[in-house]
Length: 161
Image 1 (cartoon, rainbow, N blue to C red):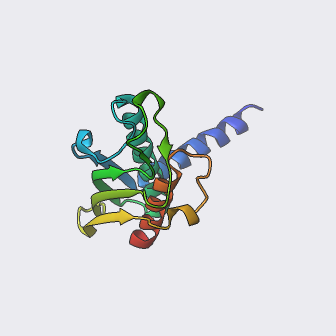
Image 2: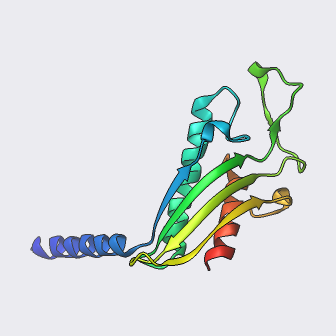
């Protein structure tokens, strides 16, 4: 009586493992993140690291959804400038990121997309900018990195679909 549910569970686990093995993969590297223009609050290493980790996770997740099974995407991010800025008149203890259209998000990167056999599908270098970020995509509305993630989604959609 309990064999059928266990058999179904085993089949689902096997199918999930097979899908995961065939799914596209992504590797994201941050090149000299300590010299990025603005990846988080100045002097707040934890904030910067958590922002970069969130960007990495987002790119890995999106690549798995968008790219054909078996392909591998390698991304090297060489600079990040988050939307908004800490304006110079603010005291450090009270810094607040001010988001205005004069402070658009920017991410510079290199990428390489390869098939399972290692042959290169596409590679290049991009400087992503979104000057209209305040009027754009709202799919990440409750996210601190909503503008950056929307910009990355737009890039991946144009680049890989």
